Amino acid sequence: MDGTKWSVTPTAAPGGWLARDASSDIFAEPLDLKDHGFVYAAAQKNLGPSGMTMVLIRRDLLEKQCRRLPSMLRYDEFDKGESRPNTPNTFGIHVVGLVCQWIERNGGVKGMQKLAAERSGTVLKAIDESGGFWKAHAERWCQSPINVLFRGPNEKIDAAFVAEAAANGMDGLAGHRSTGGIRASMYNAMPVEGAKALADFMRDFARRNG
Image 1 (tube, rainbow, N blue to C red):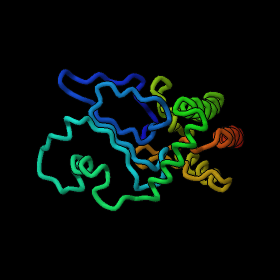
Image 2: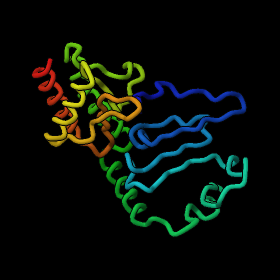
Image 3: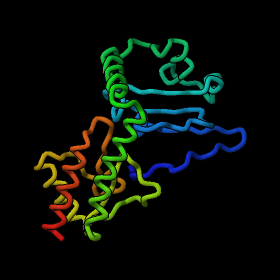
Image 4: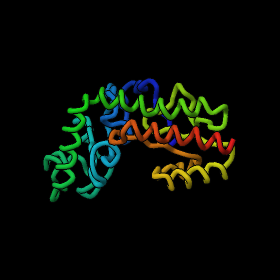
């Protein structure tokens, strides 16, 4: 949402544990799961089709219940049913399997991390070279390698950029409703050439509108 990431994994408080939403970076880089009790990742960004979810949960947390919940909201019920408390999404499972094979063929998680750094670095370079026309939303020390948020001189320019980019085959660049601006979400499946095309368009747009 904000285009940021933890530069260092936090340390859990004594007796506590960390919960992590890894939807954007699961299988995009090695994850330090020390002190984590719960990890959630929606599949539609890096793993497979929407409707699939990956959850890692510490076994002792499965035994704790804070209140009565329907069975479909209880991870201990999922555990008992080997993640199949009802008829599973077999097509989604198959696609996730294909995606995992693709990741392995392309260097594994470290290979994905290298590609993510190349994609985001390409777009960030275009921002740095714009003479201040483009401004990154996040400071570089906490910049996400997956989602790069940036802005032009004003909202009118941002809207014009998004519309013109869509007309040139680069859709979905409007920023999140809570942050505005422009957001380039570059997940595992996006080729490096896509980031290069975006960076070239950013330079051309800044030249014509600066």
